[in-house]
Amino acid sequence: MTFGEKIKALLQEAELYRGQGLLNEALEKFKSIEKFIQKAPKLKNRDKILSKIAVKKKAISAEIKNFRKPKKAPRVSDKARELMKGMFEAGDPKTKGSAALGGAISLKGFGQYDKAIKEFTTLLAFDPFRLDAAGHILDCLMDDSGPDAAISRFKEWLSDTAFTSGELDKIRSRLQALLDKAGVKKDVSGLQAGPLPEPDSEVDEDDILDINSIRFKLAKGAQKGEEIELDVNYQSGCVLNVIVSKKEKGVIEGIKTGDMMNDIVFYSPVAIFSGTGYVSDMTGIKSGPKKGDYSLSVKIIRILTG
Image (cartoon, rainbow, N blue to C red; front, side, top):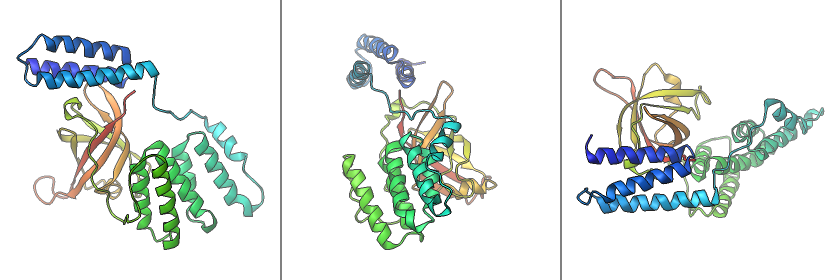
């Protein structure tokens, strides 16, 4: 192992500590790496690496001082969840839609975003509840996955004949209000159906470990909600390529270029971590031994730490 490779391995080890929430250990590791590099004046890009370490030390120190951790939804048992929904149940069939809406709002309030979104999605088929349900879905996506997920869902609705143009205008206004409130400088007034512009990765390529496989849930198609695990064919920085067999029709139908993939689990030889990815390419292979299979390229946008 060269000196440079050893430095990279040590930095990855420090990030692993940070990713597991071991902030004090991560800070000490970065300090020891800093001392190690300071003793090597001829190291290539020495000042740049030291500057990067200084930034990371400052960020970790702030995390330790303020004890800030990502907001996590409270765990609620299935029994308690059913009880929450039951609070809104009624015997009159005319009120069943309102009961379902109330139950979904209750789930949302308890941070059970995935289950709430499923409930709200069911209500999109009913005229009296469609706009409220759509608005709540955007709320859930903003709180749980961020603005990209909310914008992506709205773009899907733009291509959905279930919504009238008037309804889409109202949903667009709701989305814009949510983005403005969150401080996201994005104007959706001219947003049209189609893939989102490819987002930039928030991850430093030097910090990304070698990834062997990924696991995620399909967001659409016949196998929607099903967890899929795929081996990584090759990796170039923050971009992973995997091969999807032509036999996996449900997977092929459930992934399109331009999709945001939330809560992906990445498996490396030394760690397991999660994050967000962007489908930069999903195309059929037209020649060679893999003819008929699909090439899927996923760009790592962010990695969750803490």
